[in-house]
Image 1 (cartoon, one colour):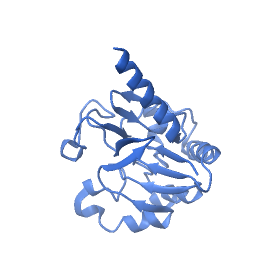
Image 2: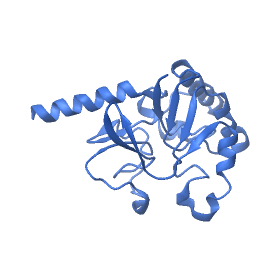
Image 3: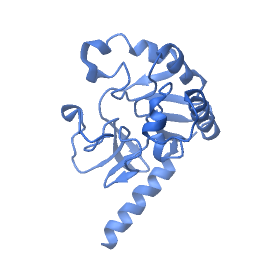
Image 4: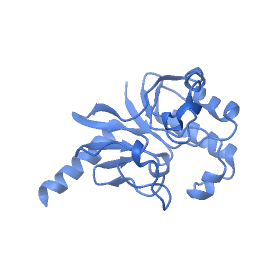
Length: 196
């Protein structure tokens, strides 16, 4: 039983292919590629923490793809998820649709977890930075108290920036990343800091 992390799948979102230079010809190929890569690393008994932005476009077709993904799935909604609390009242009533396609839990806002013996925050948004040139959602970002943060939202801008680790598909070969790989990245950073 393994633990994995991912973000920013953007099922059904054709423009993300160009925006992030994804290696797919069309949205159908992207959707199929993301599902195949997920299912090649995640087993039925594994748990995947999805840090937001699952599906866009027609949710009837794009969100339903979640039901074809292996493992136990927990969603931490992002700004493109209709159930994200950042949308205010318009988010009410959407959580049930996300559960219906296979999310066992939906956790709003920053959430504390233990990963490889370290306390980490899980949230769609990073402490700072954005996918574009303008930084958005200041009031909804997690507070930076000096700990590690796993996040999405920035797509291919960085894999790691200080104590922020982007688990988005655009920087992890379009696949979920394992707890062990994240732990090794944190260990390497700690060793570099100790050597400085």
